[in-house]
Length: 209
Image 1 (cartoon, rainbow, N blue to C red):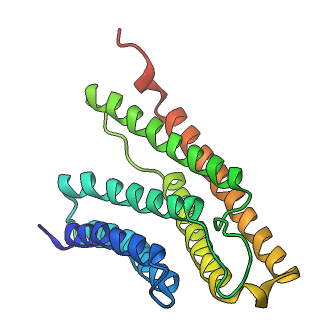
Image 2 (image 1 turned 180 degrees about the horizontal axis):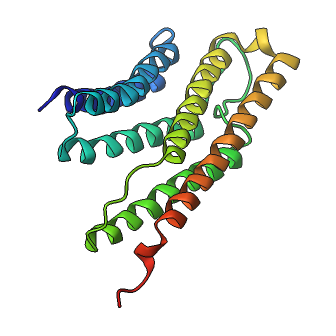
C-alpha cells in the first residue's frame, strides 16, 4: 500500500473519532475536538490526491477507496449536524440540531445523498460499457463546498453548546444566515456537478447500436 492510499485509509479511520467526540457530551469541548479531527480528515482528501498525481502513485485501490472515504466522511458529518440535538450548557433552551429548522437539514441531506446515488449508478453503467469517466472540476468544487459547510456547522454547534447566551440575538441570526448561504451554495453546486457530469457523458445512457 503506497502513501496516498495510507492517507486515504487514515481518513476513513478518523471518521469514527469525529462521530464519537461530536456525540460525547461528557467530554469537555468534545465538539471542538470533533471539528479539528474533521478538518484534518478533509485536508487529507486533498493531500492524498495531490501526492498520487505528483508522484505517479495512482492505483486502482486508491480510485476505489478515495471516493468511498469522501462520501462516508461527508455523510457522517451531515447526519451529525442534522440529527444531533444541541443543548446549550447551563440554560433552559430546548435542544435542536445545528441546522434549524429541521426540514432544511433533511432536504439538504436528501439532495446530497440522491446525487451520490445517481452518480454511482451512472458510473456503474459506464463501467459495464468499458467507459472510463474522469472526475471534473465541478465535482471537486462540490466536495470542497460540502466540507466547508460541514466545518462551519461543526463550529456553530460548538459555539451554541458552549456560548449560546453570548451569541443570543443578532449574532446568532447573523451566524444562521451565513449557514443558510453556505447550504444554498452547497446544494446548488451539488446539483450542478451532477448535471454537468451526466451531460458531459450522456453517451453512457444511449443504447448501443
